Length: 178
Image 1 (cartoon, rainbow, N blue to C red):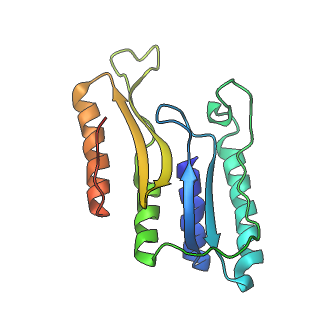
Image 2 (cartoon, helix red, strand yellow):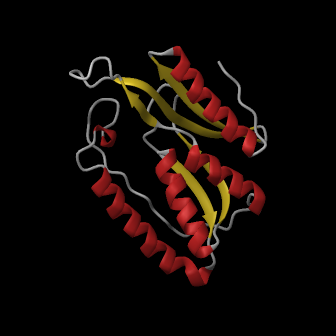
């Protein structure tokens, strides 16, 4: 999932100065993402420490998802959230440091999940406003972040869309509504 991947990448960047070569995740704009992938460059001297840190993140995610439906695929089967760090061939290119900061900023701050519960019907515990940070994809030199927003209250949906627009604007990106 994009937010978890953003958390791991942000942490590895802060600790080990990783460089992001690629990032992608999610399958559809109306589905909760079940996988995400990033290719990063890590100094050889930091690789083992970074791998240990990734193992620590797996423990964190297992604890966070212990009682969550978020650890199930579309057919309802349970799956494990697992982050891996493995050696590969060096990436031909990496994002600039400035672009990487923008990508991690968006990955960490774009709203996802239930934003507000319906207070008019507290007995049913229904979401009123929610968003889904559904996909990250690179195509034709552009990186697209897809966030689906929904709300039973038009004003709250507009607020959520404004949040996405402001985050996009703060990194020099634009927002398109479909």
